[in-house]
Length: 294
Image 1 (cartoon, rainbow, N blue to C red):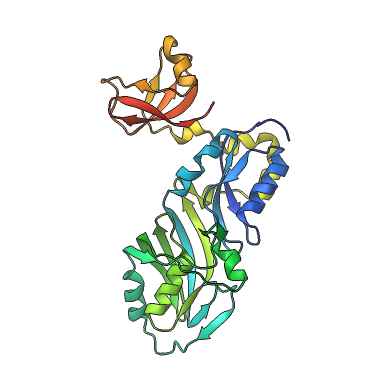
Image 2 (tube, one colour; image 1 turned 45 degrees about the vertical axis):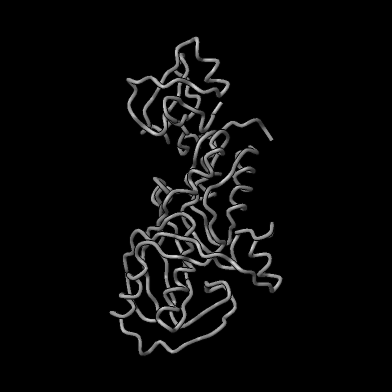
């Protein structure tokens, strides 16, 4: 593979049937570059926004994973599966003919705010060094601890029972298929996720996402579709070091914070030649390296 030619974040539309790792592998082949990663795994059957990190942007994986996300999903009531989505083995079916729209809406909206969500067995979370999904495929079920997640917003797009199409904005670590399962359980009929589209991750929106086919077609001018790390952090205050402190910045050393600088938790650090070098975090009267991009 060639040396990193591309650096930054590209908003990829992940199509159905691909894993997030498949997308990364395809991107490595198209761009002839090894240093590529992704942020925020999507299940193979799900589609939508998958930020792909190129070159020096790969260090941002944890930051983007931490961001809130928006989804459009279809909940199928009356069907429970082992994977909590329609692709799994059906565990039980229930009659939904007595459900009323108002009752369904009330239960869905009851999940707004924080709630304790039990991670599904069919997930990439690890217990004892093994992925839960691998244990599940071996027919094993292990104890998991519920995790606090937050549903910031839910908008019901359409109700045609037993199906409900909704839009949700959620915190990191939220499983939409588990939300569907939990809504079904609260309604006493069970439920699973029939489809899922991720429409936003942080500032990356589905309207600006491009397919792998588009990446291949536009490879010669793909830089036009890549957001640089500098642009991604453009909202942060900018600090330039003086020439005598350039070497300290380049080496990732601590720096003294000037009292006259705008107050912020994070700063963009540039050397005296105005080259973007790093993101530093404020700690008391010092700046400490947070992400280096040399």
